Image (tube, rainbow over the protein chains, first blue to last red):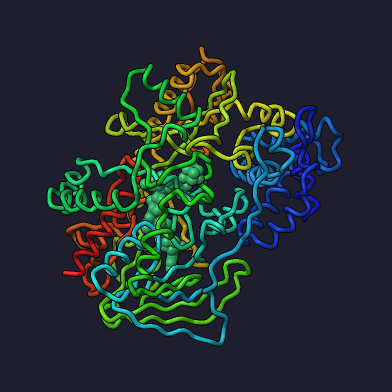
Length: 130
Length: 501
Ligand SMILES: Cc1cc2nc3c(=O)[nH]c(=O)nc-3n(C[C@H](O)[C@H](O)[C@H](O)COP(=O)(O)OP(=O)(O)OC[C@H]3O[C@@H](n4cnc5c(N)ncnc54)[C@H](O)[C@@H]3O)c2cc1C
Ligand code: SF4
């Protein structure tokens, strides 16, 4: 499942001439933390979103193949079309994957530097115990 | 001073107080401090942990993990699934909000009196008196000149040019530095969220605080509230801890938020046909402008400019709102190379929002697992308000010199040229075309004179019960058309003052 989520996120936020892609960020670490920390419902939503992304090329590029077997150009077309499909449930499922990818990418120090922003301080996760 | 945080299994906690307050957000913390100042022994019981500015996260991921109720995964169930955002920590949603302070408009009290038999001039006066004091205590001030940031300045210029009333915001913030991180909690400790003032004052006055302590049930003896019980929950591991029971000599004030208070009362066996009913909200949607020069919207106050000129007619409020990059990146439409291309413009984007004074009414029910399920669908009339408001925001961007407008509506082009913004007038009226956010929530335990249609009376006392009061946004029987924290705190203060008499 983790592999499918990573595949969807990498397709959604690839490296470009001007910006690092999510593959340049610590995606493994991010997903490990998210799996450990997140509310079960959120993680379930992410898994469902990644599954939807993987199994819907039949609806977008009309090929009975999972997304990870599509050639690069068709995969890109699939990614663009599934994000704006008029099937609301599917659109929302994929939106959650993109939203989560954005959280990983936008918090990366190298990405922030591209926009003249300071790196984030760590999230301490601490609280008063007494 | 006593603070009992997460306690592992095996050491059950038992306490006693005059009054128990459930929830330490805008309503709960205000009610608690008012009772403590009146000499009462208060036990404040909060589901979330107690975090100080040094504990606050920086990233959006950290904010979802450490501060939001259910990871921000609550959403409306209806025609569209819109996120419902609330805080779950000591201080409640005041820790993650923008601290905008707006007085309750006078017409609201007339409307409550006309439609619900509560309110009127007497309540207006009580609320105004409370708001005078709260403004002093929480240092309400206008966004300082140095903290305005370009997005807020552009919005002001645009509204002035279009000729409608508008202003830099008044906020509960002392010496804002314009770091634009209000939504993750102010690590600079400038924002006067209630974990920084009313909660510590309650403790200093002899109160007790249980954190990481979600109340499962209000204990009733017949129709009298006599205590609460629950089980500690660890904020990181979500492990269940010890059981806790707090006994109340005088009563229980419930302030667990709109999505939680009604469910808690229902689960506790409180009988009222109006419980969970009359849910309302101000759904908000953004319109983005792309400018030639960098806007750097995360520099300057997170929300620093507003207009209430259209509150009565057609019924919306306009505000600036700077989303962090790690939130906006996933919210821009598009994927792949197209999305990355769009993101290169981030520094040039200003985001302004409309908050709709929606008339639609929903209901809060419980899922099988006990989570809140908010059934809500915005009506066509409300969607038409959305559209009018978004068109006006687009006009503002054009007036401010934007080179492109990003309407963020499904079914519309991603980007409109300034001379194309009238296309927004034909935007779809289907709620599914929008990703609206619900952050101003009302109802679920509304006040009113008629016990068949309301849960509490005009002092927040639950009809037919003794020693049971509700003091959060769930008592508010209508929308307000303005940001609610000031109204919630003033009502909570006046309800608590009434308990002292
Ligand atoms: C992002 C955002 C920005 C906002 N900005 C503004 C603004 O600038 N100005 C403004 O006026 N309003 C703003 N609001 C709205 C405002 O913050 C809320 O309306 C207000 O805080 C609601 O107050 P409340 O007391 O009803 O609930 P909350 O403040 O949400 O407090 C409820 C508390 O009860 C606790 N709780 C829940 N269940 C239990 C239980 N079973 N046991 C114990 N504790 C429990 C919760 O953990 C929480 O801490 C904003 C909201 C959001 C989400
Ligand atoms: S804008 Fe920055 S300094 Fe000002 S209150 Fe918000 S987080 Fe604090």
